[in-house]
Amino acid sequence: MAGVDLRTVQQLMGHKTIQMTVRYAHLAPEHQMSTVERLCSRTDALETSTDTRTDATPNLAVELADAVVH
Image (tube, rainbow, N blue to C red; front, side, top):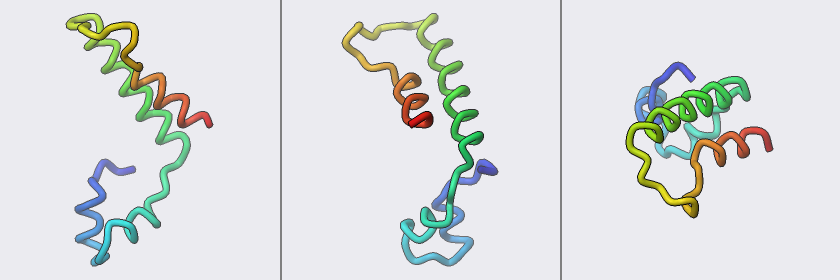
């Protein structure tokens, strides 16, 4: 949640597998939602400048927000 990638945390903690690191890397719901909000704002900015998607293309930001809620 501090912005450090899990691979680096794995190495620093001496975990042999990434699964061990992930076991202890619990994200708070607030952190997940703030990440979704950042992705949404980035997606919105990209859509207004160069939107080449079709209506059949899923909206990643909406899917992520839905996953956090459920």
